[in-house]
Figure 1: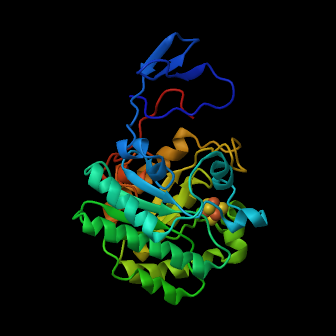
Figure 2: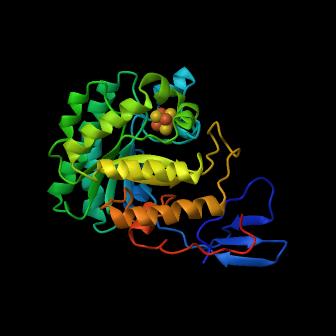
Figure 3: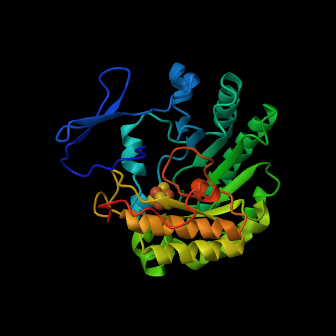
Length: 327
Ligand code: SF4
């Protein structure tokens, strides 16, 4: 089974979708494979208004991006892997969502297609006033949680929020008691020098130690292992990613381990390419970590670039396969 293909520059691999069946094709080898595409939600396809507010992410997460701007771009200090500004310019989504828009969209999707989503994800850029931005994000998460409860689907559909921590850490307590909520303050990298280089805005304006302190408060507010933080595998050596994941897990924070992928609008672009061996090392280490701590994966089996769901199911147990020719 081919799970994913990354093509860099000119290549003999192409994706063809001339008919109903998309195929990945290698013209030099004369081989092709069918590609199984995840169906979008019918209600998003059928309503331009709803489609401007939400999208289906990874096959099972109803996602809201708000705001679709981040002040780090205005300062030229955006995270170097981030493509938010370019993507926002290319797509017709609303720039800032209200709590009512999120509540109505969650209700519409759960009413029209119950069973298609298992989580609601709220994410977006950051406002210069971090306290205001945090409170707005909390408002969206509360609205989503209320809509899930009103549909009688709490317990089946969880609500996930990723945001910057507020400056006033007392505001973190506003997350207390929001049912089914998972929240993340993302570190991006564990090694301090890598964090500074990869996330210059976060480093200048908040700092890695302060994010860790905020994560401690987050564990108190949302509960152990419902607090999360991303470490991007491939931006630092595997041992560093795993050291960070172990430290987070020991704090009661569930690490999110996303594999670095190139986004066309990001500053890094194609300049970083994690190898199979590096990622296999991270995956094996994560598997051991999941055996020691009750880590909760941030994404629940939806098709994206996180290793956590698979690690939580023991799919990386044992030595990784050598894969002939893999580096
Ligand atoms: S904090 Fe970093 S990753 Fe998040 S939106 Fe801003 S620039 Fe992008």
